[in-house]
Amino acid sequence: MTSNGEQDNARELEDDRVRRSLIFHGLTEGLHGMTDGQLIEWVLEEGLRLQEPSQYIEEINRFGKHRVRPIRVRVQTADKREYILSTAKTFSVHDIVPFHGRREEEIRQELISMRKKFIREGYENVIIESPKLVHVVNGKPNEVLYNAVGDCDSVMSTDSRSVIVTL
Image (cartoon, rainbow, N blue to C red; front, top):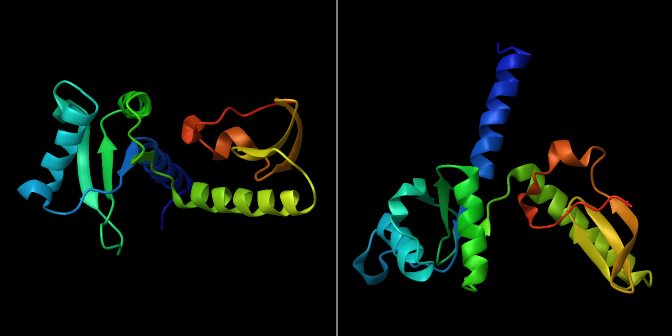
């Protein structure tokens, strides 16, 4: 039987792994005769113009059952992960996205569902600023329509690319 402390440590370790992970979409297995590791290094070096791409990578694995399975890449640090994401955005590489853990994905799905509900009810300009739905009026956040979790900061990490708005 494990103690609460051991469970907390395991959860923190998993949260850290999620915060350091990226998903690369659209890279066919064996593309140009390269391994997955070579493909990722090629994307980082040629696509994002990063020097010494191997210094960013800790672990690579494919997952899923799609015809072109995505690649999960665990980056060495959260800072390096953020740098890769910002560089990908600069070069308009849309096939590199943050990895979301199971709880974050459930919250994202809940927010999408609730956003559709508010739009059906007549609200316009409802945006997701994880973990909240915010009604925007005249280009500015007006009110929080829905909060997916009670304590936002403890559940959602800030890597969702949205700023948490407190009104």
